[in-house]
Length: 85
Image (cartoon, rainbow, N blue to C red; front, top):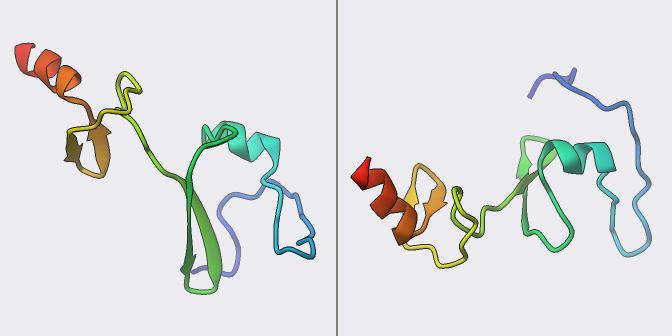
Protein backbone atom coordinates (compact mmCIF):
# COMPACT_ATOMS: atom_id res chain seq x y z
CA UNK A 1 0.00 0.00 0.00
CA UNK A 2 0.99 3.61 -0.48
CA UNK A 3 2.81 5.21 2.46
CA UNK A 4 0.42 8.18 2.34
CA UNK A 5 -3.23 7.24 2.99
CA UNK A 6 -5.71 8.51 0.40
CA UNK A 7 -8.22 9.58 3.05
CA UNK A 8 -7.55 10.30 6.68
CA UNK A 9 -9.68 11.55 9.51
CA UNK A 10 -6.64 12.92 11.32
CA UNK A 11 -7.63 10.93 14.42
CA UNK A 12 -5.43 8.66 16.49
CA UNK A 13 -6.55 6.15 19.07
CA UNK A 14 -4.64 4.32 21.78
CA UNK A 15 -4.90 0.55 22.02
CA UNK A 16 -6.07 -0.46 25.51
CA UNK A 17 -4.57 -3.31 27.56
CA UNK A 18 -7.09 -5.78 26.05
CA UNK A 19 -6.10 -4.79 22.49
CA UNK A 20 -9.26 -2.77 21.80
CA UNK A 21 -9.46 0.37 19.69
CA UNK A 22 -12.51 2.65 19.46
CA UNK A 23 -13.64 3.37 15.90
CA UNK A 24 -14.40 7.12 15.72
CA UNK A 25 -18.10 8.04 15.37
CA UNK A 26 -17.53 9.89 12.08
CA UNK A 27 -16.00 6.78 10.55
CA UNK A 28 -18.79 4.54 11.91
CA UNK A 29 -21.36 6.87 10.34
CA UNK A 30 -19.52 6.95 7.02
CA UNK A 31 -19.37 3.13 6.92
CA UNK A 32 -22.87 2.66 8.39
CA UNK A 33 -21.51 0.65 11.31
CA UNK A 34 -23.93 0.51 14.23
CA UNK A 35 -23.72 -1.05 17.67
CA UNK A 36 -24.05 -4.81 17.34
CA UNK A 37 -22.98 -4.92 13.68
CA UNK A 38 -20.44 -7.51 12.59
CA UNK A 39 -17.15 -6.26 11.14
CA UNK A 40 -14.48 -8.14 9.22
CA UNK A 41 -10.89 -7.45 10.26
CA UNK A 42 -8.10 -8.26 7.81
CA UNK A 43 -4.42 -7.50 7.39
CA UNK A 44 -3.56 -6.16 3.92
CA UNK A 45 0.14 -5.57 3.47
CA UNK A 46 1.02 -3.82 6.75
CA UNK A 47 -2.43 -2.30 7.31
CA UNK A 48 -5.41 -3.39 9.37
CA UNK A 49 -8.59 -3.17 7.27
CA UNK A 50 -12.00 -3.10 8.98
CA UNK A 51 -15.15 -3.48 6.90
CA UNK A 52 -18.80 -3.93 7.75
CA UNK A 53 -20.29 -7.36 7.07
CA UNK A 54 -23.71 -7.44 5.42
CA UNK A 55 -25.86 -9.79 7.50
CA UNK A 56 -29.25 -9.20 5.89
CA UNK A 57 -30.82 -8.37 2.57
CA UNK A 58 -29.28 -5.23 1.09
CA UNK A 59 -32.74 -4.02 0.02
CA UNK A 60 -35.06 -4.74 2.95
CA UNK A 61 -32.72 -5.80 5.76
CA UNK A 62 -34.44 -9.16 6.21
CA UNK A 63 -32.17 -11.64 7.97
CA UNK A 64 -33.55 -14.55 5.89
CA UNK A 65 -31.01 -14.39 3.09
CA UNK A 66 -31.33 -16.87 0.28
CA UNK A 67 -28.95 -15.52 -2.36
CA UNK A 68 -25.48 -14.06 -2.58
CA UNK A 69 -24.88 -11.86 -5.64
CA UNK A 70 -21.54 -10.07 -6.14
CA UNK A 71 -20.78 -10.29 -2.40
CA UNK A 72 -24.20 -8.84 -1.52
CA UNK A 73 -26.99 -10.70 0.23
CA UNK A 74 -30.53 -10.63 -1.15
CA UNK A 75 -33.64 -12.30 0.28
CA UNK A 76 -36.03 -14.35 -1.87
CA UNK A 77 -38.85 -11.79 -1.55
CA UNK A 78 -36.65 -9.03 -3.04
CA UNK A 79 -35.42 -11.38 -5.78
CA UNK A 80 -39.07 -12.01 -6.70
CA UNK A 81 -39.82 -8.26 -6.81
CA UNK A 82 -36.77 -7.62 -8.99
CA UNK A 83 -37.72 -10.44 -11.36
CA UNK A 84 -41.22 -8.95 -11.70
CA UNK A 85 -39.77 -5.61 -12.84
